[in-house]
Image (cartoon, rainbow, N blue to C red; front, side, top):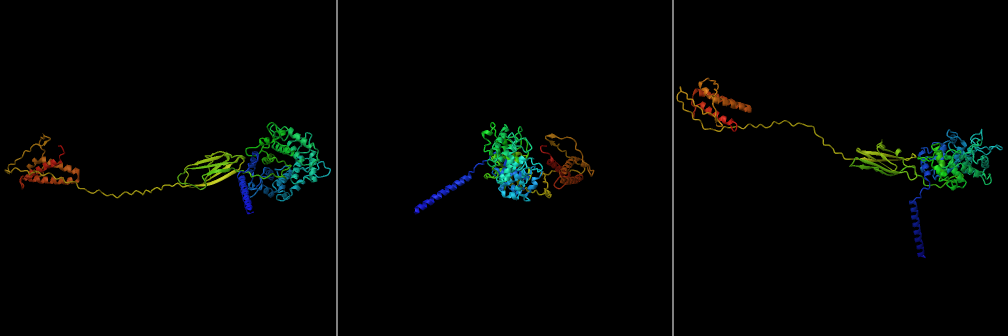
Length: 603
């Protein structure tokens, strides 16, 4: 028994583990979005138009957007539809429905109330229909106030915005009122049945329905809305030929592109085509079935052709009238939701559509620090998903330190890059704004730092000239003459007789020098002075040369001159000096030796 219990527990654990693994795998592999791109692009457009108050500009437009978004699988109370804590339903509750119904952008008050009721039901808040808006009013009671309930009246049961003329837009208004009553579950009331009966009487001979009772001209939009309203009548309450005749009218006026015009013979109209798709569904047929194909075209393909790059739908090609209403009605039809069942029965909620572009990579990462370069490359890759309107490169922006750098940036549908050069040291901020064609913006802000080391320059001290130091004085070398043997003078023979020696002519290079010597002046005027002229000239030459060379030469010249004067004086006296020879003879020998000292080399 114990083994069986343990075996059962083991099997249970294995089964539980397998189930958990399967659940994880299913979560990891999310189911693809079943909505066609014509729908998701419309949602993209809605998100781009939502205001900070949660609404879409007006009460009427907001009611329409709620209908289109919920039909597409969205939930307008979710975070995806909340801006600053406010959502579309909150916007309807925060504003006056009466003011909106009579405002300049609404031309039919009961139709406004009918759509407001339908939007409350679509938002999952039908109980607030009776306390709607600010100030609070009963939307259903307001709608009923426009119905003719007078017995015997030819318009009894009809709804009209004008009390003075019960036929004004009565067909159009009554059809929408019936659809709103259906959303609130009012189909069993007498007032509902009276409205059905009156509407059925407004069918024209061509099978179509006009907008107002006094008009004999049928149109496709009101015929398609009337088909939806009349299919809600209890079985047997109406002539069974009414619906087939109306169907024939629509099919007869279907255009070559598969769409429907407002009036026969005009261009394809988005409102008429959306209502036509809903009417086909209300008759339990398929809009893309063989009966509604024109060649390869269908009502859905014709409606899709009216979508712009922003995700919005044109009412007619090139006519952007009421883009929010037009887009919303188109989404309801493209999601196969006729007003006969929707919004009373809401479709299952799908994963909210991610409307903003998504960043895949952003570089440099927040806090990146550059220490060896001043060149910074900003790069980013992004996507708007497979079903968005796509990134619009022309609308994207790049800012660096709050300066617009979009122009030098290379921006594409899936990536961008911007090369920054010579970025100064410090913290820097860059911001990317990636914008899709609908106008949704994804903002990314990052910071990076440049901290490249800067070498510190060595300061150069001011130039101070060094103090002047004179070079040391080096006295000139003293040149001593080579001593020569003393000259033996001829003995003085007689005071009266003076013997004059005849000098040997001076040989220079072997050539004799001739000519009479120039007599030197004799300060004493003695006759013997004339014979010493040659020696005097040599002494003068030596003195001048020494004087020119350096100052000490002047002193030497002076001393030589002084001694010469003394010698001349002694010679004049004819005295013989100690050791032999007269003063003159010794002087002449000294002068001869001085010539050898100053004579240039090779002379």
